Length: 179
Image (cartoon, rainbow, N blue to C red; front, side):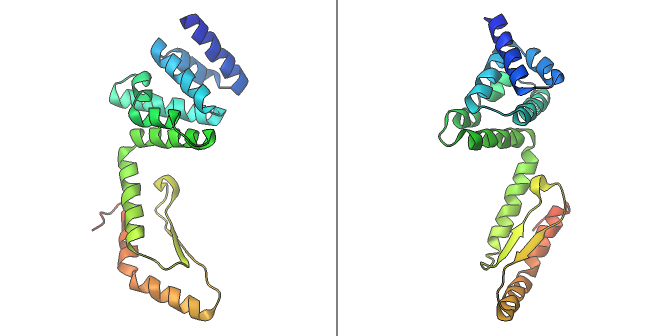
């Protein structure tokens, strides 16, 4: 059975043009983890980049937590994504997001805090705040959508009224404690 799974993995690796180093890491997993990964890849039809990202992230999780890949893939959050409803591409993206959350729990917590802070500002409709993706920067983007000079004045006044909250968010992005 293990030889059959290994052959299926090799076939899939050729089809997806998986780099040899990632194939070697996959084949080096314990048999249960190899099979679980194969099942997940097929279920979610992971593209090559997604497969590489999943393998890398899973590898980091297993090293940090001292667990097997099969045990990570057996977590309720992962099973819910794999067996859930929705399009396969959206579930594949959700899988990678869930793995990132396991790998970087503090990053996820910070993202949630920042989103909560932005939401608490209760900005008017024409103002949007964009947080940096994966918090890879300390820059905050504020966008205004206006049609008239009066709307511009109104939006700028709304931003001015929320200056303290915006400053707190910017400081959080820069690594300073909010609140």
